[in-house]
Amino acid sequence: MAVGDVSYAEGWDAGARVEFGLLTPEEATARDRDGEPYVVVLREAGRAVPTEVHLVAWRDSYVGQWVYDEWGRRTREVDLRLLEPDRLFLRQYVERRYASPEQPDRAPDAWRMTLDLYPGGKGGKILEERGEGGGSYHTVADVPEGRRWYPRSRFGVRAHRARGAVPAPAGVPTANGMAGEMPAAREDVWRPPRPGRPGLDLDALFRPGERFVSDHIGELTVDRVRHIATLRVPSGRLVVADGMEPDDPRELTERIPPGEYPLETTVLVGEYEFMGERVAAVEEPVVRLVVRDEPVVSWEMGLSADDDPRLLLDGHAYGFGTDGATGCFSDAAAWPVLSERFLSYFRDQAEGVAECLSDGCVRVTDDDSGSDLVSFCTEGDGTWPVWLGRSADGEPAVVAVITAWSQDLRAV
Image (cartoon, rainbow, N blue to C red; front, side):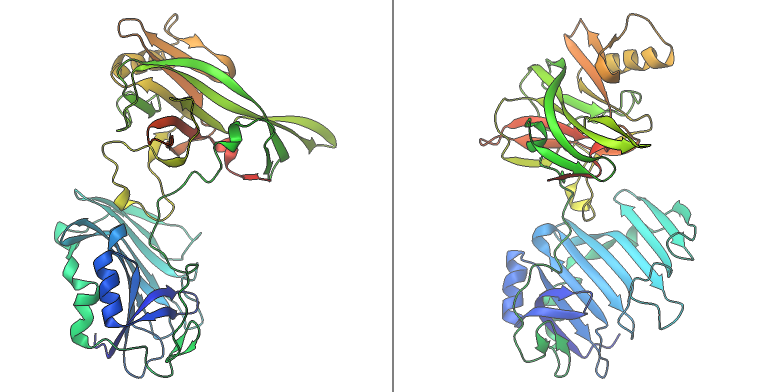
């Protein structure tokens, strides 16, 4: 591909196809060195829209590469992650084919092929010949190891300095008008991918009197905090997983002091209309293990040993999977015994191996180790993130799971 001009900027407006916060090569080099986000815009002479846009954020271990057709539509989107000092891993590749010039950028009905890749030869391929909603074909990603890794030197300022970086060519629009005007920096358009966040104020959900609203119910108020059980964790190692899957324990890397901790849920109450009558609504959207009775000042994902946050797509989070809408908090050291007893309770209806608690929760104990497993209902299948709350001194204070009841909750 013959590239006539290369320019740098702080950001890129994908909708308007314009850069903002233009940078000199020296300014771009400084951002590159410091890991600050910036973009590289590649253009061909005589073409109004760019051929490629590279989105670089070394501090976030991310490089994006967007390839545009002559109508300014993205035909390829490449998501690369800096997993090694000098090598980028191809995390995701999306290719689109447009049926006519009239189809807009990222048209939902455009032909699309998506590769989702992971280290170790893992990954999947999705082919949607008629776009979204038109059916899809899923296979294993047939991408050899040599095409999953790329040199870091191919991207960034150093890769393009030899081409002669210049300001945006005259006549090319920028975010604040035509080239030659220095656009102001903006923060509302492009940013590096960010892992998912809880999405709700978990502290407020446990404060009686706080109000929330649900699309399908209406207004709800935090009525009380309900104690489910006391969980014994003598090893200080915590598993949060589906107890029906004894071979797949998701142990958190964060250790907690050996001890006994209250497992709680929050109870929200309200009313909604059903067939002309007012019906009471009771929801329990969060389950939490209270490790320290101190305010939480920050939340993060509860990670396991196999989780690498650098591989997460924007808004995604790691968690435990369940096909039975069930989760469990358990001592990790006693997991083999506890989970097998839990499974036998449901699979074989074994008597005397479990204690039924309120609202479908079950407790299993191991007297030899002094450990417990306590289950809870996620209210749905899928993958459920685990959130770790830290106190002001950085120590773990709360471990929480948001259930399906919270999917449309919003603070009033």
